[in-house]
Image (cartoon, rainbow, N blue to C red; front, side):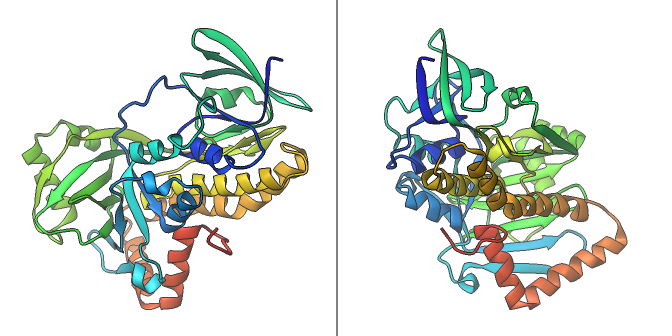
Length: 385
């Protein structure tokens, strides 16, 4: 066995890089394997909760997240039905409910803080073997096959490698929806407001980004493909009809991309000398923007467990980690899945119930405050960090 580390992270996206950076100043040795050979342009815009911003601050990465746009207000409504609720940073007692930034800015802010040799680009994990003592991974790097053993292997991104772990089952539910994403501009300024508008076809989210909005439009596959094929003027007309006049006219739209949506999660998310975090553990519908935030809460808990463990990667350490993440993880999966099932339909009886729920939330400050804190810090959170 030519190489050994305490923690080997497979997947060098924001979640995997955040775990490595969280362990940087500890005596724990870490290596990250990232399959992509070099940074590639990624069009995704990510919504980070206030809790995630505090986490990135605590590990020294937030200063590198350039041009993050704060979300001070979230307006939630349903098309064709009564009821709405408005969440504000002021009522929650925080400077912002969340922040909107590009995937590339967040990723670069994290990776740039890692030491040379810790983060290997173009390192593609090929095989994994979990023994009673080690997790061993074979990977291809710079034209050679290498092998590394770790007390703990952490999978931070999805991929087929987890399929080789017999103890872990992948649950999957196709939503029959696509997300169409892109940047749009409106007549009226966003004033740091985000909008989540539920429709029978799926939610439409507008997140303040720069001078405009980052849009996530959920639609049936055939409708999404049609939207992607439209000329800009035609697309803006469709968007106007779908969202309404609250922001005046939609005046511009950038390039659009689309992809299918599904819920996917691992059961269990730990095994011998193995932990799954982020997209490897759970991939959620983008409604409410909880994916990255849930992954960063995985990181925060796992990093603490690693640094406090008597034996890194032991059964007792991983079982304690599992228990610590169970409530928040199940809560995040259930919450996003339930939103889609309850709001993405045209059942009249449910429409009235949805409206009543939104109106009730807006009229009950204590309930609204608890909801805001859960969105910012996770289900069952007792403290910010």
